[in-house]
Image (cartoon, rainbow, N blue to C red; front, side, top):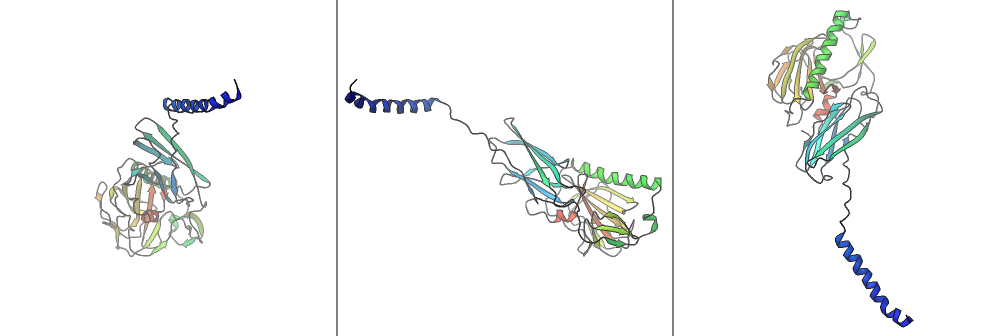
Amino acid sequence: MTRDFRSAVAPFHFMTRIILIALAATVQPALSLPAQSPAITINPAHPAPGAVVRVSFGGGFVTDSIVSVSGSIAGEPLHFRRNGSGMWRSIAGIPVDSSGDVAAFVVIEQASGVTDTVRSTVRILSSKPGKGRPRTLSVSSRFTRPLDSATQARVDLENEKAREIGRRAHDSPRMWTAPFLRPRPSAVTSMFGSGRMFNGTLSSRHLGVDFRGATGAPVHAANRGLVALVDEFFLAGNVIYIDHGGGVVTGYFHLSETLVSAGDTVVRGQEIGRVGATGRVTGPHLHWTARYGAVTVNPLDLVALPAGWY
């Protein structure tokens, strides 16, 4: 083949290769990129022990509809709800004795049968939920001397009652659709997590919020819910526990009078009892507590939930 002939047919071979490549592209299946793995967001990113955290993820990563979402943080189930913009949201509680990392995971099941499991960790801000010097209190010696076996058994039973109410709240439908309220409008006299020194002995952390009030002052339900327990405890005095559903429980301690009964449905802001000085107290006040499942949390974190989380 002469040089001139090869020069003449070269463009023909080049065009032929282009056509063959184009034809091959039309018959080969398009490559599909793997779906983007979902990422969960936890706020605050570095919570303190006893904090209520917000867990969320977007639905944009799925190729079909989601049929179920589940998961847990610190072993407590999450209860997700989807908002109008396609974000799935739940709250969770960080145990007060947490330090380091707390395990978190979410399981997302799609209609196609595909299941995504997303694992994460929550880095705890501090090993102590409260700051500042311990609060010094004087109480009856019957509350500070070593408990006899019968009294200790009673206290243990009462603590287990409270934990069981929290566990059962995971099985209750969520009843709250509005912000949580403070149960009293008065000043807070002791914050969640502060140390408590009874009669000169540092004995505990304060796992609730105290509100000032004279005996007989009204106490209101923080949100809609079902009264789970009305009882008289050795340390907490006259108590009311309200199951708000979705894992959330609030408790009201040291009451002088209770105005509701177990099984009652209460509305947000309803008067449920009156301030008192029953149980281990220095004077009349309301001790307000909260749980997410079996985990004790700061009740003011419920009040601080932003719009869209209730």
